[in-house]
Image (cartoon, rainbow over all chains, first blue to last red; front, top):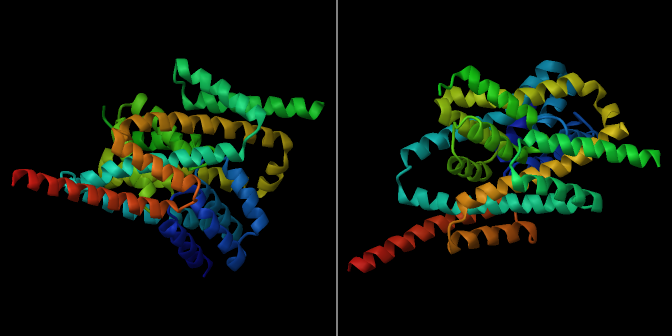
Length: 176
Length: 186
């Protein structure tokens, strides 16, 4: 039963990957080794693709794995399974939060969780920066950064400009 | 402003479409679409949802969409939001699955990838700046931020463990506050 297997594997990822995004990757490699729904090479390519296609990496890979194993129905099942645990857990937490929003311990926990979440995000940002570090990259970062000081633009503006500059740099490099 | 399910779907479909370069971009995109353009939530709420989304299992972008969807229109809102957020990703991969490999090997596309990667970094930086003002209020919260940041960046401690420690810190902090209060009374 390929559909049941897809459901179980991706439900498992949705349930056990903490910290989001790249936390799912070890699970996905494990599936490549045990299930042969895709190869490790395909997964590496998928992660690269996920950075330009819409949506989180986990959703992209779930759709892809479902599609390669059993077509559109498989991709629907795999994609739904990977977000189903989130749907259940977050709705329960939302209900509990509403019920206990005046509890001082809950307030104190959120008070501490906010800076902790901010710290995790900052670490992700610095890591990404170090991974992609190059002089041209730093230059582009500074240009976009300076642009943002005067006025905060729509996110699309930054993504559009950086995509066009990336393309131009590629074209210049390949013609030299 | 009336928030119909159709409207929630439309906004989250747009958010899902703009979600390039990994789930974290969802934060600046939500700031722009939900807070600045529509005023459906405020920065304080987004900051809280982000912290909780990182603490719970599952994809952060999915958790965050469900939190906001639930806030807007309860369970149906949550289901609509996650459906809208995931749909663009799903359609894109299903349509392109057959030619994905050839697509990645096109060199000029890699140039675009690279550029977008830098754009995403700037967006994440801007999002942190905004969240910063909502989460770091005084010395105590600054130290929580700083310790988590260092442990995650330098020691590579898993986010799950750091989140559990932050929750414990919150409990202990309140416990100490309560004890001090009773001491003052006595």
